[in-house]
Image (tube, rainbow, N blue to C red):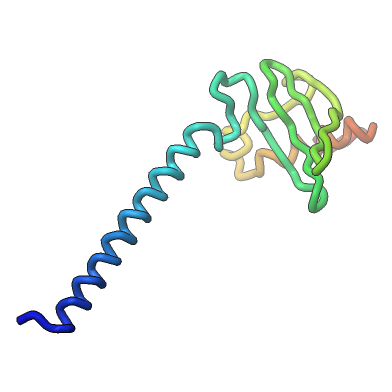
Length: 126
């Protein structure tokens, strides 16, 4: 009852089992790496990327929470420039839950306020 069909079938089953084991190990590695620091919050909880927006292919403006202060930085391929530093009250940031409950986008108003302060404009709508 041994023939060329049974040997090929056993090889196919072996390859499928090995593939599933590798897939499971990749899933475990991804979960482990995401718990270490891929979520935007440091282990101590004092540094967090609050918002980020890409302004070109190589430049991003980010709002960072550093302790109790908020810092806006421009990040490019070669360097990072500080744009300003504010407290939560100075920025007038809304709580994320309040904005999401209202159906809005939590990052929109925060970035508009930062850009207005950096460029010196006053936005009467906010």
